[in-house]
Length: 371
Image 1: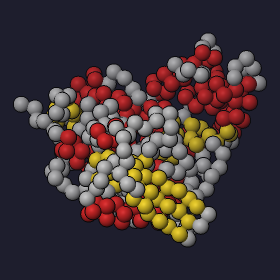
Image 2: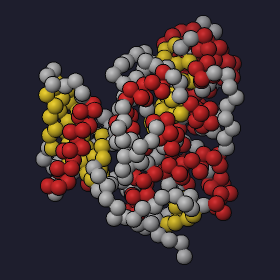
Image 3: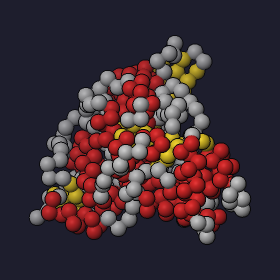
Image 4: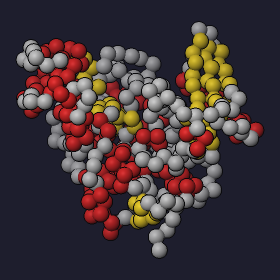
């Protein structure tokens, strides 16, 4: 009989893989590789994802790794910008190319203009131009428009983004700094070394190590690829299977960590695109009915969530003032005083991290929200 993982067991296993049961004493590059990257389409919010996972985390360490080209930000899973180790830039990018192709050719803005274009020739031209020096999309589009004058420059630049491995270069993404959104080719940035070979089998095993136990649908949601059931089926002799409480089949690595469901979990602050929130079809392993009751605007700002006992229990925001900064936690329901005290302690540390120079730092726990 196939074992059943109830919601709490699935929650604790997921938090363990995602380094959220406790803070870990890991080098940043090792943690990023273990997590198979972090979605990093915003310049800085993803730093909170590392702060919540690593003991003694210093943002300057990440900035140094980006400058030294040991970490990069590039379009990968789901065709979104991810922070990954340099080796994974080579290993993962070819595997997710079908998702990037779909993003281009089915794109509501760029798909129709690019139809009928010699896309390989366009990609080759973009690769040659960006190998000279990093350019913004506007600059790249203008250069390409000289050869393809009948196409929108934005479409030309977008096509190159999906067809050529590009790196978004610093200072964009460096903590406490800003800069233009400029790209160059991965080869120009990382050097001409041979890309590391990887297969879809490797991709599945990496996902399960960092996100399991999970369904095939979860795996496909994470990477943006389809038809991975055949790959998983081929791995069955090497995997352990479970079902969730709804009877869906879950796959995992046999020796992976699956803690006791009563393992205590400190409060955790997630950033807007945290792995926990974007890598599963069924997010009930973390999200609650109270979260769904909030009816967040799907077109508005993505909420930054607070976990209590491992599950979504509220959201948080940072407001900067001329004379200081306030971090406000808004619970979904009234919380026991012990949980409030633990939240305030964690929020105080997070505020010190986010606004170290603020003269007046305040943590405010707002009244429980109404749906």
